[in-house]
Length: 166
Image 1 (cartoon, rainbow, N blue to C red):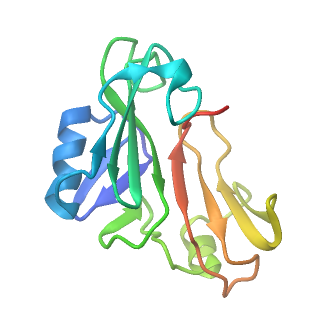
Image 2 (cartoon, rainbow, N blue to C red; image 1 turned 45 degrees about the vertical axis):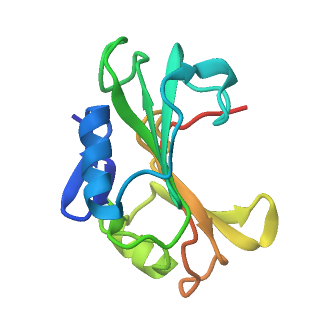
């Protein structure tokens, strides 16, 4: 079991959590999903290139949970499980394992995730904004964008897990 994931209300969804149980837990907090891709081919998904063979993306407006049947640090291949999320909006009752949510400040992020594993950088797409990254690990890192790089700047997105690439 992973130490990282996301809280939906009081339910903790750790990386490796069962896909149907994760969807039910988030639906209890945010209502029915707005979209469910079903199981689709991982190399040509709308999420980019994902761990093969298949990926499933379930959306609630500003939250996307990604599930895989790939071999990960959490399960051997063939077991459907939660492995990544993208949270970029203002849905209530969603936060990281350490209690960080959208609109929290970078000072709050630093207090929750102290030490050298937290990096606050210039946003590669907008030098006036910020990008943060905690614990550069293949399957369990978290990251996101911020309004800037100062302690008073706020978090605008949170991405957990490996996700998919291009």
